Image (cartoon, rainbow, N blue to C red; front, side, top):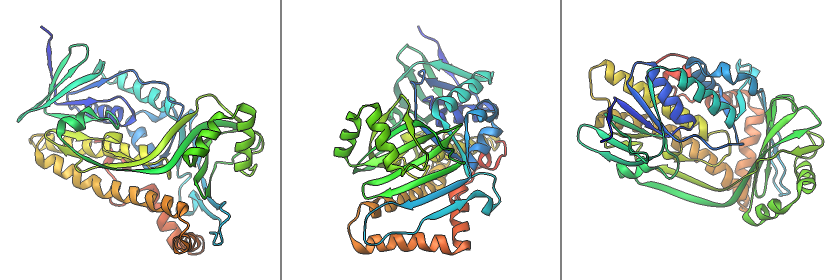
Length: 401
């Protein structure tokens, strides 16, 4: 008969949000088990905002991957549409709000490797390599079973198991989703001109075309287009694709060479009706799916992990039940406004780009014009983008749990 492991918290899923939660909780003295498969190769990148970097520094992760990250010191928004009403170019600089950089752009494989290495070094973290196949919530605990026959009992499960979350289904939590008539193509590329730590987002009629610095003369690209155009781009050979990307980027980075590892993702948005229920808390893409626009997805996931970690440590310190409804209700309240506001902002930006409705185009143009012209408004927008006032858990402020 397989041995049953008893812990306080079990984290299901080994992506960045799950690893962050597991490292934070185990490091704070919470008996924690991590159930996760070996992560697949991921050539995507993540623009980590300053709060996320601070959290990783506090957890002892950042030093292992800082050399693989590129600072984001300037952000440009360029209206590349051919519409009657076009917005002015807007430039945001980190030093205007007293920062060296808005954040750091890093390939996910380097980030996950650093997190995985740190998790292995936390002696109190129990790691179970495998796939969870059942999650059963009971009155006083949750039982998680793996494909290989392991069984773990805990007071709380943190579901970090992605958009097809087993934990979400076990908690009976429904989600609201919407698809867009767009597809995102992602890949990294080398170029002959320096990016000068500047991220440039071209707004087109089909969606954003965003170049984000990587180390050296390299950048990551998110190209959002309609499904038909996405299919056409996927059929191009290497030379044709290089020429297409150079044309779309207006040659600001010179000649480009697309690297292996292309990604294709239909655009969609999804948000859960509750971030936690029945001793199960959801983090990352198990809780929300955001289009790869505006560097929101992973930063939201890390704020999820930091918030639930903080609440668990507080409940434990106060002698309470870490999986109680009151803890999960507070977690839901703390995360909902942050996620909804970011999701809404991305949705509005995307919809105004797609819309041929003149008032919508005018509103987008006016908004960008005001950001360009009114310094206090621009600085307030930058500060809110980097460090949202409504959701700054301790880790995001560089403080231990």
